[in-house]
Image (cartoon, rainbow, N blue to C red; front, side, top):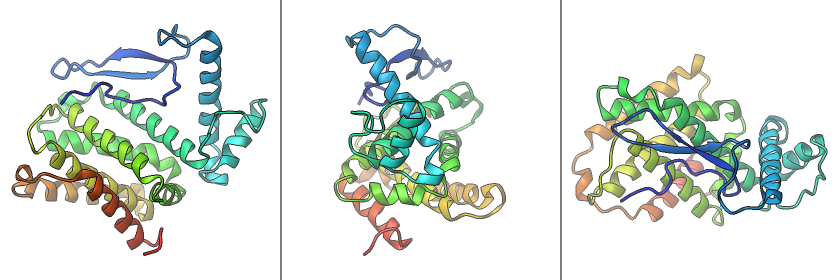
Length: 259
């Protein structure tokens, strides 16, 4: 099963294509570079608007610590940049738009950061753990507020979006690690990695150990558990349903949502 885009950006982004220096994968990622001419068919006006939206959302991320994942953070950023606080189309779905923007950007930046280091790892498991660690560190600046984002993502109307982000993240991690499997265990492998990532991310939110040492130990143990799992390829995973249950149950167990 091929991936059309290895790193998905916010739908309105102006992007450029960059080839990663890992010949065995031949990976291409897309990241924001507003100075590159657009070839997507958007008009110049659309490009200006898209870049304005990204500028506002990026600044809004710096407001999350104080204002949370909220439309208020977006409005404050727009005002500081000299735009109307009601700037149309910047965050049409409020908090979820800002969370989605962060998740897209964090994945882009993770791909860029790991692209020339993956050859250093002797096996797939170590490679995956390095990618997971790199992505988790993107969340660290927002770790005090991330349970709030997780609770928003767990709301029934947002679970499909959360599922798309997590499945995309898991698929791209496996692809970066060199897995191009199209076997029946494709979903099982990605489901297992998604569960490892999600549980570690939520553990990290509660970790008060120096330099998050307990988080990295927790992540290592989860990978060891995943490696030991037997017959993972013999099961067909109903991934959407499984993800929805797992996300809700993990959040409920930590008191972020009600049972």
